[in-house]
Image (cartoon, rainbow, N blue to C red; front, side, top):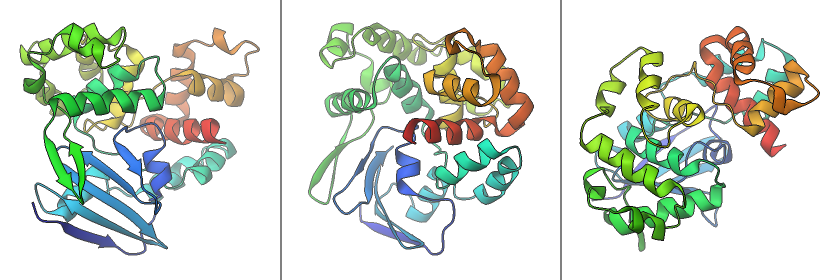
Amino acid sequence: MKEQKYEIENIKSFELKDIFECGQCFRWKEQKDGSYTGIFKKNIINVKKTGKNVIFQGICEKDIKETVREYFDLNRDYEEIKEKLSKIDDNMKTSIKYGEGIRILNQDIWETVISFIISANNNIPRIKGIIERLSKNYGELIKFRGEEYYTFPSPEQLKDVTVEEYRKLGLGFRDIRLYETTKMILQKEINLEEMENNPNTTEVRNQLLKLSGVGPKVADCILLFSNLKRFEVFPIDVWVRRVMNDLYIKQKDETKVSKKQIEEIAEEKFGNLAGLAQQYLFYWRREA
């Protein structure tokens, strides 16, 4: 594949650190020059920001402009979204100012399912390491600028992998989850393509919850961070519980705050932009 280039001038709502370090993706790596290189599907792209311009360079299955516009959600007006959320209250205004360059990526649903099963009770360096080993062992090798990259393995590429082999990759208790979920997808017990075409988020969530290793938080992460793109969901982890309690609920013991309580406030305050509000609040509280 031939290297391609695409440049956008005067881009708004696009900061590399905000996009790649906000917890939504695991296969983008910062380079010495401050740019990031990542692999998704069979595309390897380097993203560099100079001033207000962003340069995308890499090898793609299709046209690079079409590829990055879809993957980076560039056809959506994030300025309008931020303006709307900023009017809710000062907490939202502050958190948006902190993570103003966040964009929610359109990631492959299969890769997102497996990545977030791996993310359960795990830290980011470990998650990245496991995904890298999984890809190196079972994905496809692609060379780019003298470096070796591996595609995320498809369900078919994982069909003969045993629980023991997953364990050797450092998956821990998640080995059986990965094994079972792969089998469910291969046997069409759960159809990921059908999910993409189903507008009913509750139905899609219930389908995801049938997968081994997918609980409510992981299901919501898949709904928000994959190409399912359900902005109304509100994934809740320790940081989100903390920030929602500190700002809105103010319970003395935050561990007593229920998921239902948080979801009700999120729906009431943020409506169908709850997922984006969650990202700004989460990133602000965790980083600042």
